[in-house]
Length: 286
Image (cartoon, rainbow, N blue to C red; front, side, top):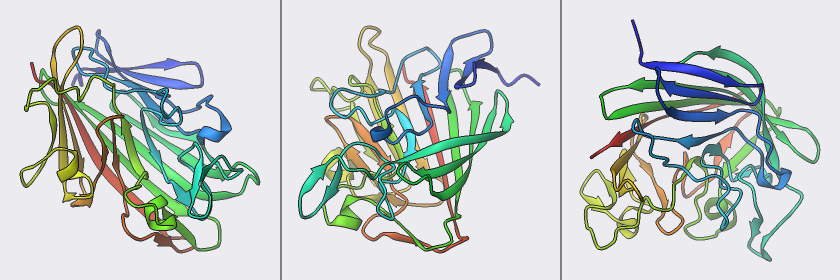
């Protein structure tokens, strides 16, 4: 049975998911060549709609450590796996020798509908491995206008000591700074509303806009935007399959994050596992 998808490889750095006989939907770079102080990690860019509209932004000039669609932990027991300068309450943001790297180990499955691989989360300065992850990206075309990406991960503490997983709000008291979990840095034109109320970010419960949504508890949120040049309307729905979570959103960048914890650091005991399960739906609305 045809899935309507096909897999293409790009050496030993990246794989691509395409429509069968058609355009690119997603390029997944599993061996990145980004700078150590950007916390190198696998990322998906570009991510496109079925019609070919690009939805992501990689290394934007305002925050070059924001790598399109990627999974991060901002504060992992004193290590920065998010990239860029690290915040501390006593001296603010500074670049410090505290970054980490997510290192691809092996493919467990590599097909047009599923990419599954294992990774180690390593401290750059010492090469200590803190987490071992098994990650799967599942793809499906669900209509002539839409396709889905289901991103699941199981992160096991292999450090033989308790780990504290957080972000600058929960770890260092920086109000509203919840950069952790699955991150989506969007293309700049996604949320240019040009006085059109239908272009915005929406969530279950009737929530609309950054002020209402940031920090709110919801199981899903949706960006509704319009692309430059083609003027095509696009929707991106983010859903947490494990229930409601508190969302992080920045309109002007624009960026959305799905933090697995919010006001308090998550304590992960030796041998314990953190599981995440999200589904993203990309739709050509017109």
